[in-house]
Image 1: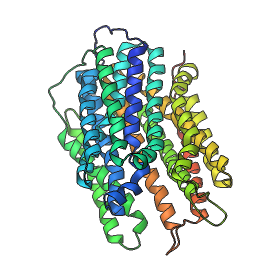
Image 2: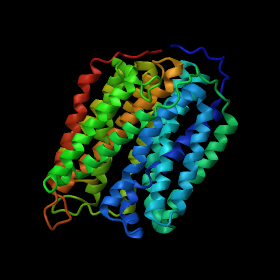
Image 3: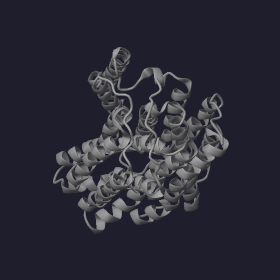
Image 4: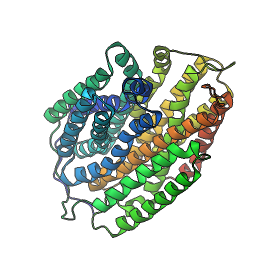
Length: 465
């Protein structure tokens, strides 16, 4: 049902800029753990399995919070929910910064996972205060800065942790998040709430989805060791299937489901989710494999690069990712979402397949990674903008949150798949993965990404101005 809203209060560039700074700082805070897992394992005396848990707990909580944030934003107003959500994120960042041990750090990461819900809330606010054309560009800017912030966090986390301490790599972006939240609260006018209902929160759906995500991560983590514990893996697969069946049944019966399966069943919606998942899967495999190959010291392959050198080599990708959001929003407005997604998918597939064939020079990896980052940003931004502006205003948050959940799952599955390939490709007694493992990873990622063209052919072209 279309919700009747009060006339929006126009906003200026300063308010959109505040949202962009918030997206940049939350993106940085989200990404500091991934490149510093080895350092955290040493300092906190963590096992590899505990390190894997730390690397995925934020993704799991983010995927759970995002649909709820979108639904509450649609119901109560995007700004109101956004400010409260960022208070939780700020508390999580401070807990992580002060954490003396793994248990406290995990608690901080659980609280930080709420940050993933900030994007759909930002989209709700932007769409309510700007006309359609301007809102597409603003959404692109916010999305691009979130991606760029992730790259900034990934590049800066190692040097900050080594030169200062692991505490400061959480503290610095948390301070930025607090400052940006205060700016948004001051500069952004409140948006009117949508149509309220008394159905309450879909707690069964939330709990079952939690079980799905946790079990899925365990299945992916144990997949490389299937030969040593096949019964455990088989049991987890059965549990995963049971959770999925129960969740679908619960969502169909719920008066106010956490994720509206009727919306997910719409062709435009499920196609956008599938495309986002596939594109982010290919991206995350490259995000994992390229730094590993730069660090590798194999016979005739790899470059033995230091952490500082790897950060420098990844810098062009960070710049490309930051530019992709605004470019994707502008391209969507001028040419339509299908054209932008097609261009991004082709660019990413070609770059991944080229890396599989040619990776003997550092510049091969630098250029390939930059093209992949640009393509990912173009595709995800086009999916976000087309979805956010194709549904009723009252459904903006839940629709874009479905895209973000697909993004989170794509990154999680792709990273685990890349790790499994390198683990399987490392000879017993060696710590060096075979070159063929990297080639296989890039080939699989390129082939999966290219298959997305089968879906884009059936998409609508999108609205052009």
